View (cartoon, rainbow, N blue to C red):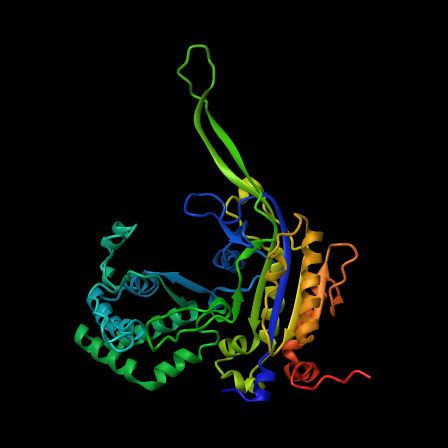
Length: 441
């Protein structure tokens, strides 16, 4: 349980934004149409949080991309051990049987076999024998059968940092250089895995799980590579007004026709469903969790951490949220839209979205949505008091967000980054919600 001072130091950044996407398809449902949800008794267009986070993660050519080099990246694959560790060692000339013997102890440490303590969540849960084996639903079975290391492939995708993969490959290489036989390799590898220094070294690799996992989290089954909860909570994008959906029929003409008159024939006739929507987006950056993920220190020891990287990550993430949009048909709709409004808050005590502003659908313009947000925010401040420092960046003329300084987006992002770096100063500047309000005269 955090005491009052620790709770004050648990900084959270809240981001609210409005973005307009006309004639677009941001996120498909299972039928290929736009995803929707009913809210306030009215159908709204939506785009999932996973869809948004993927767009931000993969914005590698963006000037504010989160990943600057390969070593800070992550790899999500069922074949990471085989493709990035085992096969490169075989190509380097090491014996296949010796590689397998040396690699299995490390593989089992990373991904414990089914039925072990780290993978069994409930005593009543039956042990599985198929974890890490070939799946009957594998879309690329041929790729596995061509490799002598197919047994290292897994059924489920796992997330590993490139730094982790490189480190394990180096350790296995050291074992292979010392081993004269598969039996000797297995014994040396088992000893290395049991050495506590190995686990400490793995966890001590800077951003071992990759910067993206530090920001968005990852799930793992093993103890050697720790599970990491996300430092960023992202809500689904939701339309602020009733869904506006239009069917867009299209055809493809057959150019090599068999008709004698030379008339063109239709080779394909289909349709897509497009929407025109003003979306409300909401995200929370747990600053303490971000520092913990980046530094490996408990969130209560933030004073010992280097806050520079956390500040830079926050700045870059703000720019990505404002300028990078997901789109299922980006090439056919050019759904490249900047946020029309971004509101940022930094505080300690409350997280609250402003979805309630749109329980009653507003008009289909950004101005209508901004008016609804400002009204909801003013009512919230009236009831609970303003507990955060607040900034806003807007393209809408005459924007007046309650309690917010109106600044350009770059200034807003830089201000948030600096507030994270000056953690102590930010905490000191926050209002204390436990303080008694002054009595009216």
